[in-house]
Amino acid sequence: GESVGLHLPTLSVQEGDNSIINCAYSNSASDYFIWYKQESGKGPQFIIDIRSNMDKRQGQRVTVLLNKTVKHLSLQIAATQPGDSAVYFCAEITLLTGGGNKLTFGTGTQLKVEL
Amino acid sequence: GAGVSQSPSNKVTEKGKDVELRCDPISGHTALYWYRQSLGQGLEFLIYFQGNSAPDKSGLPSDRFSAERTGGSVSTLTIQRTQQEDSAVYLCASSPYEGGAKNIQYFGAGTRLSVL
Image (cartoon, rainbow over all chains, first blue to last red; front, side, top):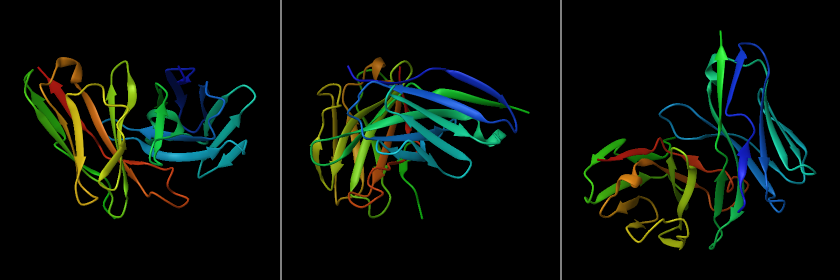
């Protein structure tokens, strides 16, 4: 079946360094992707999104890159801070009956920021 | 403004009992979603509401699971005759139905359900 998955389950970085979290997806028809951050005991929090007609989008300290040729997404976090420690999920959107959007999540990458 | 609110935050129940989980979405958000997050399964979609109707229930794992939404706002997810495999964090999300932000779902903190 279709799936969205992550290459690395755990990523450890030094405070101040840049982080890169990767994600592979299998549904070539997907046209919208989102990155979420989930801290312990909390629900997923929206970080940034990208449409399939784009290959790069920047936010505050974050950049998402999309390579449709190899069906790969990455999330880059600049100058990683201790508050960035969390599990990061990529998700693709598929349309639901009635016009809603179903999020299909990958298994997540745990980002650990070391002081 | 207030975000998505879920209650209870934790629920411990005995196998075979029924449970009700509550979600209060962001005011004005007409779309509401329930997801389940369990070890080994990640986050999986359960059901989608548009207003008070549920046009997509495709993710509900069995007929023991049901959900309703009243007044276009609060939703309850009911699990009957709970089983140990129902233990998970149940997450609710809401979003505007139209406009540029419709693709972004805002999540509550979830209800952690433990079935003994």
